[in-house]
Amino acid sequence: MSAFLGVEASLTGRRWVGPSAEAERLAEAMAQSGELPRELCAVLTRLGVAPEEAAAFLAPALRDLLPDPRCLRDMETAAARLNAAVRGRQRVAIFADYDVDGGASAALLIDWLRQQGRAATLYVPDRIEEGYGPNAPAMARLAAEHDLVVCVDCGTLSHEALAAAKGADVLVLDHHLAGETLPPALAVVNPNRQDEDGNLGHLCAAGVVFLALVEANRQARGGGASQPDLMGMLDLVALATVADVAPLVGVNRAFVRQGLKVMARRRRQGLRALADAARLDSPPTSYHLGFVLGPRVNAGGRIGQADLGARLLSTADSAEAEALAARLETLNTERRGVEAAVRAAAEAQAETRGTDGPLVWAAGDGWHPGVVGIVAARLKEWAGRPAVVIGFDGDEGKGSGRSIPGVDLGAAVQRLAAEGLLTRGGGHKMAAGLSLTRSQLEAAMERLGTLLGRQGSATGSAADLRLDGLLMPGAATLDLIGRLEQAGPFGAAAPAPRFALPALRIADCRRVGDGHLKLRFSDASGNGCEAIAFRAFDSALGAALEAHGGARFHVAGRLEINHWNGRTIAQLRLDDAAPA
Image (tube, rainbow, N blue to C red; front, side):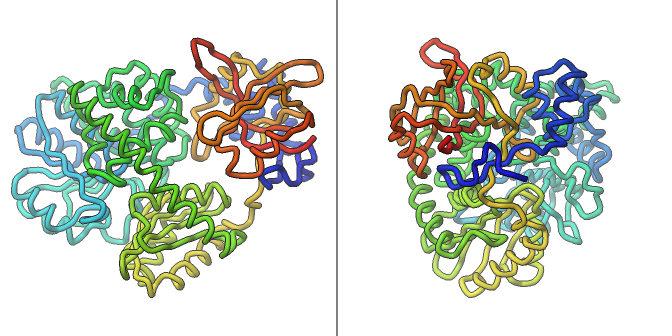
């Protein structure tokens, strides 16, 4: 396929790829038959939506997409045990992972219990001291003081730790890849167990917890008891789904779409305080969940106190929420500084090693384990390849990886652990964690690259920018953005629409913030378009646009609504440009 608009190498070094001729034909047919905007049909076609499915896809109903929770093994047992704890006024502890998914999962259970007059003990392990997942000492202490311990977003591979929980029942509500044998627990509810069919493998842990609460409510309803409000909890499920990079397909899409509506009501104290601390002055979108709110919730687990995020999401006290949000805001600022230093070193190292293979990786001494996952995500975006970043403390290394669609990183990492090339490793398709010694590093990364290469991680060009089509400035309206958002929310497995605007002149260009560019473009007819290029000077893009000299450029990016100083306008979030 020839390059879109003839752009073989843009200002950021990427080749532009547009829709195929077949995709354009299907989009045109959909536009004519469904009386939908051509641009929207191009996005629907790219997402694999058939013309006869378009109406239902644009208005997804959770009731139509929600699976029967009982299709997951151990679900009925887990739900019954939760209800028994409520009826028996038993002592419940929640052992949660320290990321957004773990915090949101814990908050779901705490909210559900609170609505029934029950409290729970929250336990989140310290990333540095205890590492990921349940450990034997902590589980033994919790079991000694509680009747039920629920592990959320962790526990599937924790055989020894769960065996230490003497005297208490243990439930595991998780989504990470399971091994051949399950840990000793009353119930292990996990769509990625090896004896599951995988149809719900795209759920994050909060999605699994939500289904468990749906089943618990169903069972309680059968016994005549009143049930907590679950629809009001979808803000937590939405946040976790996006922040954990779960694919926005099927019920996940409905979770996020409905959850954003719940979040816009600003009824959850923690999320309201967090949005205010982040100066979020517009209704939340999936972008805000992934890049504004999610990183702040994660900040405690990365470089601060591990349980801050979960406490924020679960608190019902406005003063506590404001204090926690302020602390997380400070930690997030500190995290950015730590991340920037590690990222610069990792990118330089990866570039020296090369980015053409199936895996991009970097490792360094003293790299904070709380930011290696973020840096891996940045490397993945930069190189278009699965990426792993590892920080060493002496001989011990802790790393994190991020993958690209179609490449199961978690399974590959788990295989390395089974082969003895890692001390520990696991995860899910899009993300994984690992531990290894310095002597294992080279062999492990070579083997991981081989396994990922067999999945096709190096078949596409790392320098491709995929576009949904052509757009003229006059068509970049608030109405079109609203129509495009009907095909969302956008995220993993459902990238946001991206269009190219051809042969535009720069009418205005000025630096704003920390290395961003605010621009206004116009075409030959005088139609204009506002644009913002974030971190423009991280590549040749910023300097070239700033020194435009009246030249014309093809520009590419995503349309968004910009609220500023009482104005609401359509804006292009500029991703790339090329001389016209």
